[in-house]
Image 1 (cartoon, helix red, strand yellow):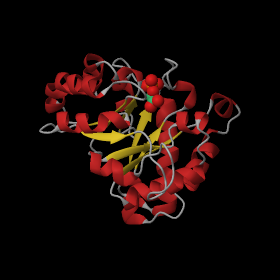
Image 2: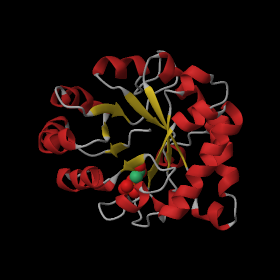
Image 3: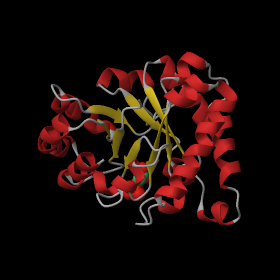
Length: 249
Ligand code: PGA
């Protein structure tokens, strides 16, 4: 009942012209696919990628935004700017933003609210570190991230949200979580939604897995009941490899 979603996260890779060439190569695979295909591209690539994606079902989004409506924030980008440039969604709270740019749950909460006001679909990224997993804190960490990042949100808004569970130890490391480990974490998240907002939200919300997803790991992950798609970093940079992920899911 939840349509699978495969999201490519290009991070700081690909210029505008490179994005156009990539989308042309991916088009036919996307047309055959029953999954939704999203691409989170760099800011300067949004306009060209949006033009290239016209007439396809590829959805273009951003990887970050500022929480304020507008203001004297040199170097920042607002949700309204993203929307007008052609984005439909935005990644928020990616672990690289949390670790390298010190983004907190409180800040991410403000960003989610701003994105929703401006009509952008937030993809909230959460996940535990290796140390947290090894000390048995995973469930606590995930629930705390969800609680604090979603503080103050109400039901119709929540239905626009997507969650991406990305264990930090699996991102860019080649260590995918096993389907069972990932599904257990997803079940913890779904139960959080069930307890707090009830069945409609818990059943409706898409929870994606991210962390070293490759063509040979996607099938096992997607067979799990609580895994609704994937957030793919490194393997989304090559159109042939990304196409294999889309076709195999
Ligand atoms: P990876 O990145 O697939 O390269 O591990 C995932 C992500 O950071 O979203």
